[in-house]
Image (cartoon, rainbow, N blue to C red; front, side, top):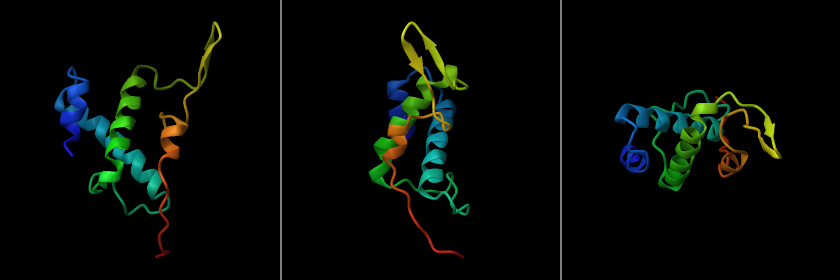
Length: 105
């Protein structure tokens, strides 16, 4: 899938490098969730299965939407509250990833 093209079609103000940076961050989060104990798997060489194409794009959306307030841990005003998770993306998005188990080397 052409992730850069898909991201730039929605966020036309991003350069190719900026779009690729967000995609790399999304891939990194995906790899960390899929293989939490296997440090041999790297986001830059990992080939995203088609099953996770929409997950990558959804993650990029959340990363871009939260880019201006990335350090927010809690905020409340006039009955509205925000509280970002540790990874900077929503728990609902993280729960869409089923972790993989591997063998001990």
